[in-house]
Image (cartoon, rainbow over all chains, first blue to last red):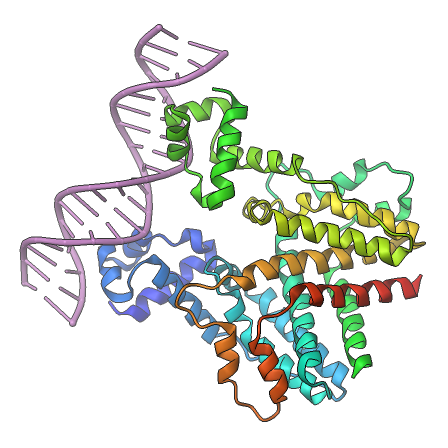
Length: 202
Length: 202
DNA sequence: ACCTGAACACCGTTCAAGT
DNA sequence: ACCTGAACACCGTTCAAGT
């Protein structure tokens, strides 16, 4: 028994079934040990989940900027953050339940700060730019995940749109809302316009 | 005992302590009844939480557009949605745990669809506009809530920024990141630029 | 139709006792 | 130092039994 083995086994449970799937008793059974042994090594459930998140964060790839122009470099950082979130949604979900979302986003914030500095922005204006991009990326990531899920048996958004019958909404728009959104294209669209607006000011 | 009384009492528990605070046993004690009586009236815990969310949604104020120009009207709808989320964060949190975020955002989507139609947008382009604004608003709302919270004892983002010592980041920017963000100003900034970009295309 | 009580299968956590 | 066992205070849910 080592705290490393406990955390690694806990990681597996969290990865497959989320934080809810991590019970001290199930984990201890998987480790072949009494539930109380975990408390000696890593402490209570909250401490264990924090350790799981720490281990997960250490394995996350670095946020890297590529490209020559300021626009391209900011774009690449934003996409890099987005990719990270998409590839490890359980990390994001865990950070959310532990109220550690801000801390998790920190490396991305630093990378953005470096690039807006390189783009020539300074002070408050630069801070605004960093945060606007961060909120766009983070917001997209969170919404995308929660919008995709729907409870079994519930009406899809498609079905809801099919029932809308209002003369003041374009019928082609209605039909388009009924189809699933291309969130990647949507993200690029919103991001490019935001970066344009930011760089136009500098 | 009526299902109305059960749901209303459950609403109180959820409003103060979130979905976690709603236990069938605590609720039944508050109602002065055996835990199993709840099952007869409203079904299991998931059904009860769904009923709580439905009751909450019914009490939400309508999304209304004001203003004369397309820009002003889109802006007012976005702000209206944002205000709704800010004033009833527990509703949003509940929708998230029940995977019903998409359904909850539906009235806002319809209001946005009406306004982009009035602004002259049609078809796919209009759908893109609706979704981009919706994601901006929703993303801000979700991130704002989760960024404000931090686990007791954890370092603040301010403290993290104070430790950053990299020559390629503007020092005034570093200091600005250490201060709390004015999310309202940030939201207006990002929203206005997005609406500008959307209307420029039509 | 409506409610209770007993029961089952779970939880997290503490703490004295063992080696 | 490290682990177990018993115990406590909780859960959600089912189901036969009552009125």
